[in-house]
Length: 246
Image (cartoon, rainbow, N blue to C red):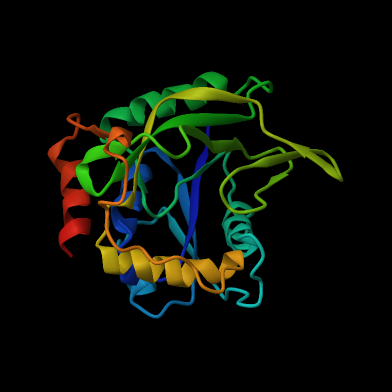
């Protein structure tokens, strides 16, 4: 079994993404990791190159700044990386998503178990969405999502987030997915307010938002949507803590 990991990234250092931790968390269970790195205004490319791992393959890209319809430029970048994957499975992990080291064997075993079952086209994960600080999660947002796709089926990602399988040329569907058996840890809302605002500013234009809403505080949320999180190892807790302090 050969496993490819892939992602796309741009201005990750500037926007406070834990992209190095994200990449390093998946490297032990992939045979290659393909990264489409958009031309950035910071040191994102240089930082990725500094990892010095032979599994990493970088594709330097130029984003289409005039494509501002429902995040489709994200789809272009995601597919640039995915189409370069050569594994039996292709594992998509976003720059603010991290795998827990305790789950790596489970993920590996699940991929092996379903490798020869054509009825399983993808594997989905449950999600922890951390909010405000790394010891609490929000219950809003998507509960689960497919992140591993069989690399022999025709598929694309219209807005960069999910997969659409193309059985026919003009009609798509969700992939038939099995449970991966664990969570993905999402740190998208555990960064400093100013970095969140910069992300909103940069990302909004690709979704057609001429004046995206600014983010003022993590306090504007119903506390009933927040749950304490006590399962962290020190390694994962440090990731969220650094996002808040840097």
